[in-house]
Structures are given as C-alpha cells and as structure tokens.
Image (cartoon, rainbow, N blue to C red; front, side, top):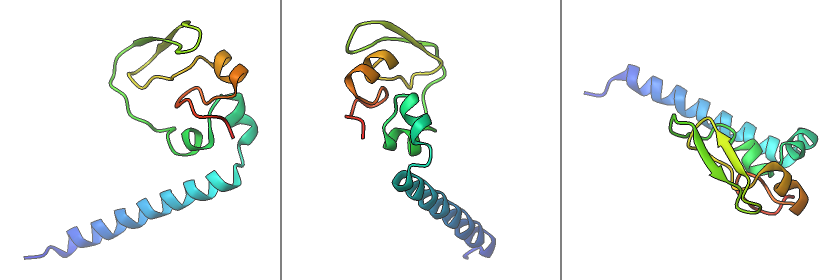
Length: 100
C-alpha cells in the first residue's frame, strides 16, 4: 500500500532540493560574493557549491601541495594549497583549479 504521507514528504523534500540547487546555480552565475570569495581563495564552484562539504570529525594536518607548509583542519575535509600559495599562483585553495 502506498502511504500518502510518505509521498507528500518526498514531494516536499524534492521541491526543497530543487530550490536549493536553483539558488546555488543563480549565485554561481551572478557571483554576488566575488570579493569575499576571492579573499577566501575559493573558485566559484567551491564557494557556491562545496561550502557544506562533509569530512570526518578529526583534527587533520596536511602539507600545502605547493610550498609544503603544514596546515591544520578541523575535519578530514582539507584544502589542496595554503591561502598564500593559492593567491600567489591564482588557484583555488580547496580544489586547485585556476581561479576565474
């Protein structure tokens, strides 16, 4: 038997998901936080889509892949480069792509 309550919940959550994705897409293309995003050393994709990335709950130490500087993170979701190297070389500190 199909539960109408479950179907209504699914409809609600699907609609919320679509609204969230649409909002992110609009922000990606309009880039309203460009100044803050660039100051944070993040590309548009990482800033508008990956800000809520998931990592394991553990203090993680990782070296910058450019200069070797030791970086510390509050989870296992780490960055590729330190902010200094990312900015100096024009790359996203999180994913490593060329900044737009």
